[in-house]
Amino acid sequence: MIGERVKKLRQEKRMSMTELADKAGVAKSYLSSIERNLQQNPSIQFLEKVSGALGVTVDSLLFNTKDESQVDPDWINIAEDAMKSGITKEQFREFIEFNKWRQTQK
Image 1 (spheres, one colour):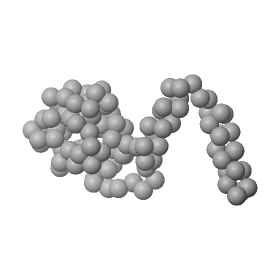
Image 2 (tube, one colour; image 1 turned 90 degrees about the horizontal axis):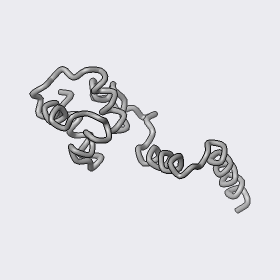
Image 3 (cartoon, helix red, strand yellow; image 1 turned 90 degrees about the vertical axis):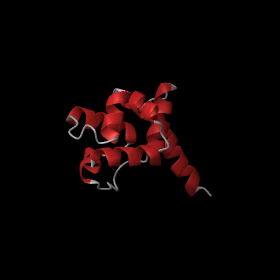
Image 4 (cartoon, rainbow, N blue to C red; image 1 turned 120 degrees about the horizontal axis):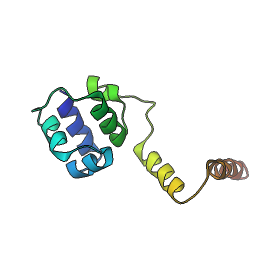
């Protein structure tokens, strides 16, 4: 069931229901009804919002698949923090290139 997968993923990410609802931009009451399988037919918009907030694909919610190409949510948070701090993509790329160069110098 989708609700069980949402709940399991939320708990694995150590998120409260309120945190997930806020991050996904959905109503906590609706999220609760999904997790308790009272509502079993969520909209694609809901699934997209929740999957994005959980850092998984919609497919993983629908079919219980694990997408190995999915980006670790911690990396997403780091990138979001960098963006909020004003770092540009170019500056971030320069840092990565500098770090690669530094590794070769050791």
